[in-house]
Amino acid sequence: MRLLLISDTHLPKRAKQLPARIWAEVEQVDVVVHAGDWVEASLLDELESRARRLIGVAGNNDGPELWERLGEIATADLDGVRLAVIHETGSAQGRENRCAAKFPDADVLVFGHSHIPWDTVAPSGLRLLNPGSPTDRRAQPHHTYLTATIASGSLGDVVLHTL
Image (cartoon, rainbow, N blue to C red):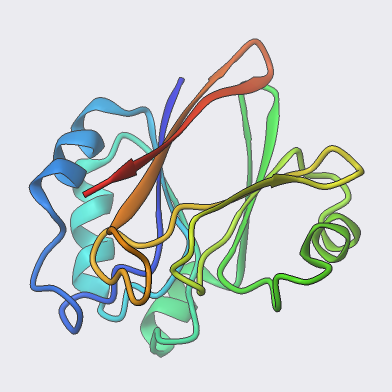
């Protein structure tokens, strides 16, 4: 199973559209995960129509329609990997322990908000992943996204891609 992880797209405020490379990934993967800050529902509609499966949450820049359709937290079992998605996790200091306490049943937590790529493992074994942003790099040197695979109940091949 192949995954595409994105967040903080901020369309159409930070960019008019997703980069072509992201759309090419959408066509190739089994699951697209979006960790919030879509800004307008039109991207949600388009991803729903083009992705094989979409898992997403609303973020702090999203309006009532996105919150109603997505909510704050999403969970899914992907071939034995228990995935959780949330937009904001708070400050970097203490993040692993705080998230492990909040998501004790998850194997992987995908989050956004900071636009800063993140890949760590909590003492509990929870893997925390932030794909950054493919459209709003802020102070980062590049726009980014993540891909990963799941096989036999394990997450693997987590790759940070720059645009």
